[in-house]
Image 1 (cartoon, rainbow, N blue to C red):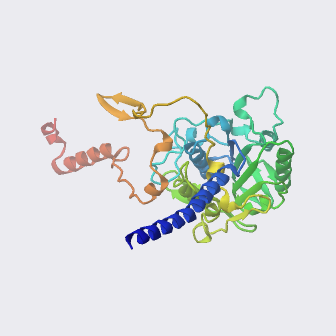
Image 2: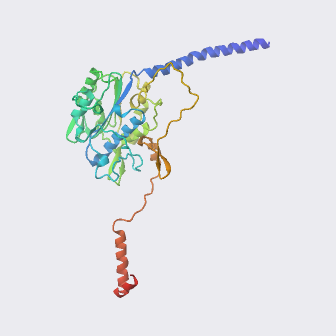
Image 3: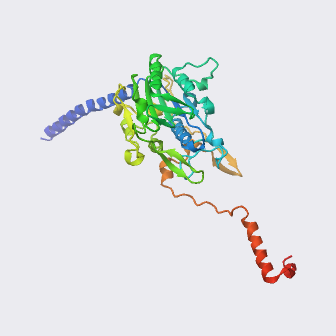
Length: 390
């Protein structure tokens, strides 16, 4: 009787094991197919702020915030083309030179200490932007100002500035139309300059900029629909301007939770900044994209492909590898160097209470106080008692 019972248990265990093995195998195959489905081997980013002048501070902060996020997720400066139409960090109106903040608590400096601006000031033109996309640059152009992508490249293109129905302004002096942009993307496809392309624009009536797209493997997002304004966010009374636009602010908040191994996909990105937060209605277009957006990871565009080297040598992993920490000694104390990508995340900053600033008397306050004291003394005792003071 006991032998029969053991045989029955063994049979049940075998059946369960045979049922689980195919399921586990299918799960591994699904993960592998998702990893190799994109077909890209490298990532690039083209980040453009098209606005000048101090009152457009937020557009520079928008671009630098996205720049900070893609660098944190692994895209190196050699694969980022950063175009800033104005230098807010060195503007004479900036109360904190060499900084650009994206939050009113002024704890997240998105300018940082290692920002590499490739096109600045009057170099940010429609012509230069289109030449970067299509690769039609003079031979003397350095590598840092080139988009050296190929047919295995996933490219993120981010634009922010002032726009309208079917156009985006550059430098308040020229415009790029949605037709010109669509034709540039078609040139990129014909010249095999990208595998997949993600286009994001934060401007008024942003959805009008992707209406004319017709190239394959292209996905587009916009902060507002045709006829809607894209609104600003985070006003700062100390400098008199807004620090960011609403859509990019909540996009940055979303990206702060993404890490290189994150499984978040494009459907999650589409939910960023609903109308209750943006006031405008964000839009997206996926009909030209061949893959299902639900299978496209955020890191397929905002991250970087990790290179893998295959070796036949035996590597000893018994002793843990301790990375060297770069520390600076100041006044006999060890203080760890902190890069701008390692500062507090936006989600932590948002829920913090503003720091109380140290009170300092205004200019001339002390002099005026002494003058008042002397006047009261003279009126009470007269000038003959002045010797009691000195």
